[in-house]
Amino acid sequence: MNEFVSVDINADVGEGIGNEPELMPFLTSCSIACGGHAGDLQTMTNVVQLAKSHKVKIGAHPSFPDLENFGREIMEMSAADLYTSIKHQIRLLQTVLHNEHAQLHHIKPHGALYNLANRDEKTARVIVEVIKSIASPIKLYAPYNSVVANLAANEGVTVKFEAFADRNYNEDLTLVSRANKNAVLESEKEILNHVLNMVKHQKVRTVNGTQVAIKASTFCVHSDTKNALNILRHLTSGLHENHIKIQ
Image (cartoon, rainbow, N blue to C red; front, side):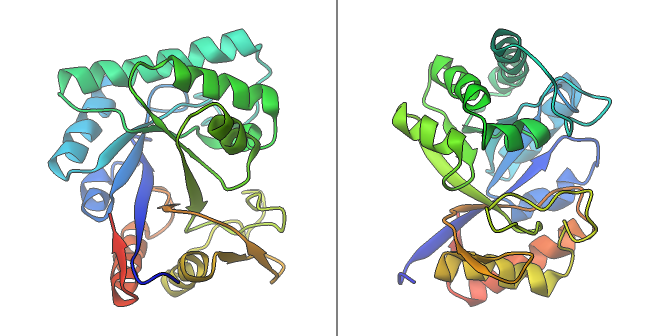
């Protein structure tokens, strides 16, 4: 490990949990639901104001337009319709950001859209084209060696590799399905060790116990994970004890 290492800690917020005031002091970036799976102008405004007050970088968290299933089911959509939906969601957040004099830092797709873009070039291309259509440079949060990350990098979009602090991985670096009881990590100690392994050794211990190469510079703790606040507290102190800066 290099002498100086820093990581970003992010969370998906504005999704109706309501714990943003508690989580925000421990975050360096956040991704705000913008109407596809959750969120409206009022919740976006509230979260943007919180993020600004804590100097937390703000991202858009667009989804398949599917409030009923919280964006966790794949929707059959044409590329044009998906582009229009994602663009509309981001514009809603941009309206709030303009009113609050804040900047959009990144885009991070949500749920089924995130997972599909990681392996499907058509979906990935829609997301990349939306990012390229935004006037100011916007980063993409995406997994290491995913289809969307590789396509974005080839198209000149800055990619920040993301990994999940509170999720188990399969050997192909996909996330263990939430349909399985071992999909989500909840032990604070286990989560810290999970992240330290990825930061220090660029490896992730998969659900089968094998070690697989991974790269990440931003780590997500889901706001709806049980004990999310305690997880963030423990993770923050543990990273500092290991001389890893959070920024």
